[in-house]
Length: 119
Length: 436
Image 1 (cartoon, chains in turn red, green):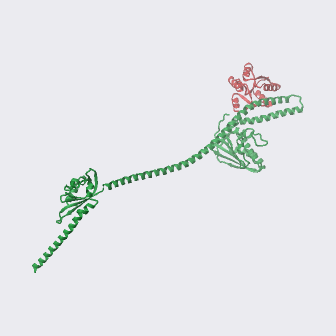
Image 2 (tube, one colour; image 1 turned 30 degrees about the horizontal axis):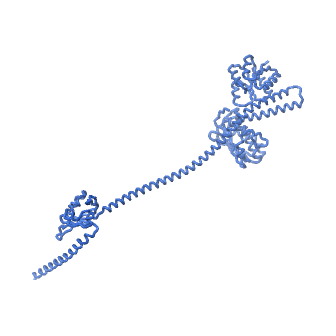
Image 3 (tube, one colour; image 1 turned 90 degrees about the horizontal axis):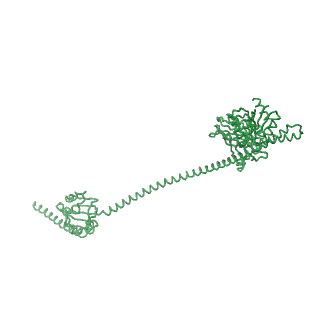
């Protein structure tokens, strides 16, 4: 079973992703900050990360930067509440997909399936 | 007979000589009386009589006055003691002695009081009955005063001339100054007009900066707000989507949940447009010809506008360079502006679409024959949610503004109420890298 880490500083959003993808047969773990996500990744191997871009602390871009430095190769789907040039920055740092909140859950599922099928 | 004839002739000659002598004696006596007692004393010029040795024998009062000597100091003295001091006229005494008439202008003499005097000296020799020089009459005309006056006159004339020259020069300077002043006044007028234009331009720039800063502040606010609103929207729509997946549920509940999801998506659409205004970004950049981009929009709307009797007049410049833009976004801008023009006309009218090169920009204009925009509304036109339409969202021009910002271009309007509006788009010929 693929392990997915959902990272968002909004617990309700983590809960929605968790419930939805669990129903779809994935093993979902949650983290509420970038720092917590990296700590979790230190302990456990993940197959995919769903990452909120704008969080307090190091934020989503900080996590991406660290993953790139570690050459982790884990596919990342970015969730963002805003548009902007930093989307390009996120792509450059390894995020392959960007979804704008509020997301269509089925669209998220498509992206997850697509990335994990390739992995 | 012969002797008597000679005797008669000799007698006649004697008579004639006696008559002449008598006449001459009378005349001389008369003349002598006039000269010595009257004429000499009354003439205003100086008169000196010299004997044949050039010694002074008589001097009139005028001569004494000119020379400053007394009669006794002069009479009996050689003429040269007093009259030969003019070094330039050293030959004068000799000429007089020889009985030559002399007339000299500006002859220098020294008066008794050592003062230099200037005279006209006229020396006329007097010959005796034997034809020899008997004496000389010297006439002295004092011209010192005249010369002084002439000199004074000359100086005065020189001064006058100098004054006239100065006046002339002053007049010339005044004329030049006048010309300069006229020119300065003209220049001033020109400078004033330039200043007024500059001031007007500054006011417009200031107004644009204020507007631009206001929109930038609004953009930052909207960006922050979008993030804060999107999270709760995500929670609402996420939960609604999860609920829709639950089985079993009534049709009514399912409908309610779908409405929640739809409205969340609608809200998402509004926020996305707001974000396009506040944090514009270019998408896919392509090199295109601007008239093709315009035509792409016109093709889509021409039929629909035709039904409202709105015509397009195309006025494209030739040989415009291609530009690198996100043509989809720019078409969105054009469509927005054209829709606004059509709404301002409702029915019947025209929109003149022009393209031209303006320095480093390609200028696209949409000039309509609509109702125009008031100055008050022109200042708010790019503000999100500002609209004069009954069903407008007030986001169209805000989005256009953001798109133009992202392209390093400009969007502006020129309008007068009742005369129509011209929407002006400026796109840089060279792609501008924006970092928004």
